[in-house]
Length: 546
Image (tube, rainbow, N blue to C red; front, side, top):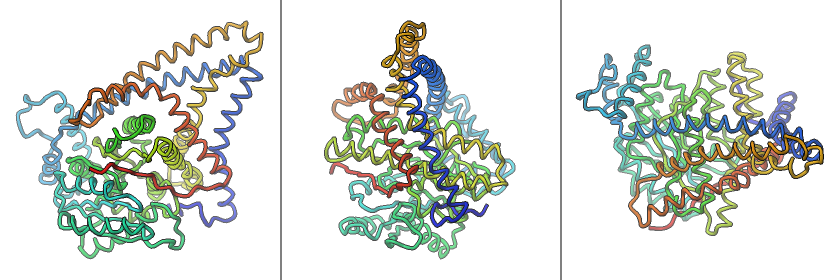
């Protein structure tokens, strides 16, 4: 469907619809929170019943999501030792390949047997796809946007591309450098270009001019300009777009040694691979022991959220560092150049462009990034707040997607309703649930009238909520356990004590979820509701010098 994925330059009915849908998320969040507060004062009995019902729904959903968190982690652990290179070689070299193991099946461990079973199912799904390209024809394009990230932040990620098991000579790296970057940043990029250029197929530095027409000062404009230059380069080299996988990485992204082999495998085994994005599991391990506890806990929670989302590909949306077919990126017109939340916006743009025939494929490998930190704890708190508010500004996609869905007759009504509900419900729960659980849930008892105090509900409420939160502690213990298991294997002093400290920090979750999750989300929705549009803020990435 031909649709301009933008909120700018609208007129008449489109402009009115845009403003209406901009108001809805923030208005719903505020109505829910204010209505519960007022009911707690005027009708504490009714509010107590509503709160108990919500708590029951919350604990059931918590256990439900916890099951999928465990399953997703198990899948990640199962694939940790997979020999991806063997699989991609076999895929491209034999039309009759059915996912057989080359050695003695009896020698396989349980994990390897499960991995092989999944692999055979993925190969079987390719039976109607006769155009699996040889893996030797696959190239990777990695775009790294830079505006104020220091060399200490950028260089480890660049080295990880070289040290991986996928041939770096088939990786084209593009530094998407903002022209308005400070001179010392430009000097660092020039120096790294000179030092590492020979290690890749090529290493390009593309300077994005400031204030181009129809662009905002957002990352999407920078990486789009870089991708357009990369397209010209690929044309000169006669490399087909469908043989190129483009990865848009944050400047601090570090990949593991098997990442590009794993990504190549998933690209090859995905039917209609040019209609899919590929989402790894983000972890924030680069500076995990340098960050304060509140920042560390929040980003571990983000990793858990992505692990859970990976179990439901039908509703999965691209987040942070992700990959997709370069052909698909060119077909949709690249990333939006006037939207802050470009990482999720590119999925919605593709879904609309291809009339709903687009999806996100979870890949069970990790990319590691930095936790946002500052020079002091207060500066870190402020920076984390701004970063989470920027993430929550992904709500800006809702009005654009809804305008598109009203016209998208080629997308089934069911699919439109499913995606619209998921998008809206995700942002509403983000902004309201921590308040209801941590603050509003206790208000009916605070404003209780005499008849309510003497009721069975009054005496039962505290017991029921206590039981619910006791059950929630089981989920919390599982999260503590998984967070320790996800830690990078490091040899460092007092590592066991650090892991214990990390486990103990989970008690901060109620406070963190309110002040550094719900409030930033409500802040973003309120700004959109009032038409006070945000500008792009680049997260502070500070790394201790070796």
